Image 1 (cartoon, helix red, strand yellow):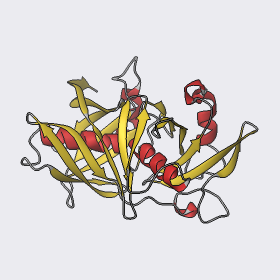
Image 2 (cartoon, one colour; image 1 turned 90 degrees about the vertical axis):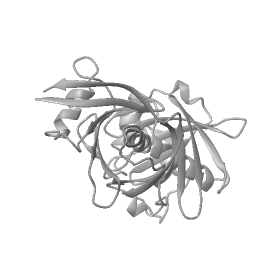
Image 3 (cartoon, rainbow, N blue to C red; image 1 turned 30 degrees about the vertical axis):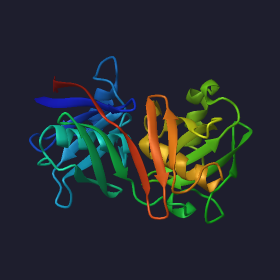
Length: 281
């Protein structure tokens, strides 16, 4: 059996995309584990299936590198938008919708020379209620609350953007963090019944934000769109940024722009096609 795929990335957050309008992908969970491995597979942060939807232009399903299914991926959804537009699946429309496990999201595409180069995604309202994130915490919200990891006290702000995030602002340079060691300890911390994505953030002198992310199911990735949104929201909640204004978030793979409003969170960034291929299963 042969499957056609497209390798794409948003700010270095790279997935293997399958067009399921005209092919069927068997056992995507196991396939994601196999193909994400860089030495014996294609290599990536997981796979994303682009399928028909009865309530949007397409549906996306995300499978992480460990085989677990994700609810939402901000970088991935921009790549889905690019795939649909560049392959003539939107009838030339630059406003499209994509169905996810976190609901239907609307994308506004920026097109140059007939190709999508970036997109603004309406990510929906940030979820702040601790029980809905979820995080086992006595208060209704988790803003600047202490968490102990490796006998060190950090202060976390928790946000869900359709998936759970724990945002940690630090004075020390995040480039020096041993994320391979502490990342899993946050991910599997007893406070997070569904595990958690953890963002470690520096506020730079110009007011922009630099982050590294440990994603549940994938480890450290070069970018996380929902994570950047959570960081923007947390920055506003802790007085480090202003609601309703653009917030620049620097990730290892590039920059994203986040705007947190009373109604929703917008995220803007690029999407890139790396290569196309065919794999025999």
